[in-house]
Image (tube, rainbow, N blue to C red; front, top):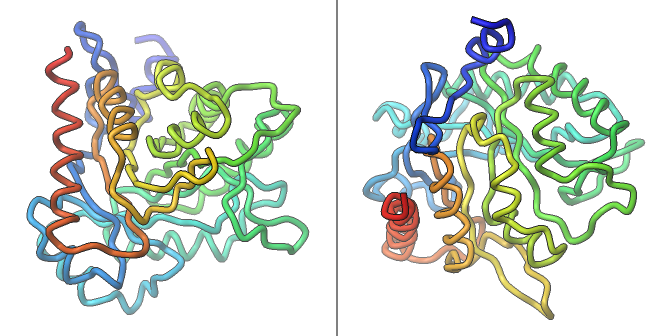
Length: 298
């Protein structure tokens, strides 16, 4: 085995089968179809049929005093993934060790298979942006993010996955596409990817970045899991609000992704204006149907 192949095997890399769909090796963590756990819908999440994993916002957790609902899910064997929103892996400052230790403690308390965060800028010089802002895709920024990822990986007891973000603007000095930037990160750090197909769609509508072309170029062999969410259009701008049913246009992007790779997991995000239990169950069914449509196209 070549040295590069050995390195990839040690990182749990998956490979493409002869049919062109990516298949997994022993490093893959099977998750299934899941939903974001929120305190407002904790009982709903517990009783929804077919929930195979959940994701919880790490900043809202106290690892030493987990909510009863999460303990119930863990006792059932449902994987729970801590998802950070404030680490700031894309900033010039090094990730704060206290935040990384909190993520590590959450992972240990939940026996999580991995931890995820956003490839985003959230603060600088002590000032909070109040939003997940896109990182300039320059070579200089790439070097900073690579260093920050390695710091995070050294503190975390489980694999680390980064999520692509939705953007309302692009930086004028970008040297790389988003797919190229993520590919470089994967190659240089072994970080896994959390691909948000709603964010790909958002960037297509708002910035003209073709979602299907991005899927063709993203290193989907390193996929940890997938996010799906709804939003709203206002004056021609798509807002990724996580407060509405997933539109068919975003489910189509999910189908396109599933035609290229068998995702380890797909998770529905819903963060406010929560609908009925039945409506959430139907959303999970629509996600499964979109995944199945990819199989009929193969």
